[in-house]
Amino acid sequence: MATTTQEKQGLFGRIRHFFGEVREEGNKVVWPEREKAKVDLVVVLIATVFLAVAIGAADLIFSTVFTWLLHS
Image (cartoon, rainbow, N blue to C red; front, side, top):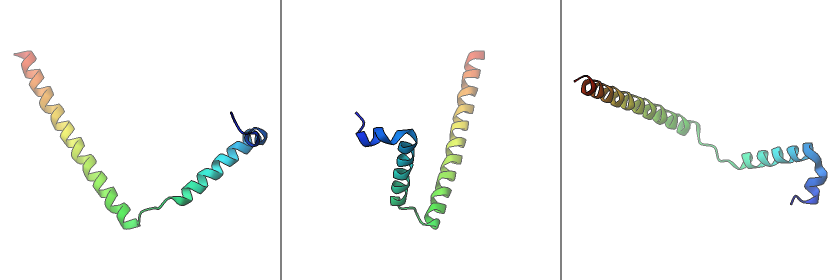
């Protein structure tokens, strides 16, 4: 059950308390250096492109094979 303090705060008081705690937790975050973030971004973009090409190639191969099998 909620504590009596939370019950007395009301809806807007609880919302304000929630966002205050969110701000406190956000201040505890250790953000990466700008160069590290750039390197991570490049790695993610390369991996995304590679996986998109690999999935596209697999789709093309499977669709070609199944089309060939079904029309034979």
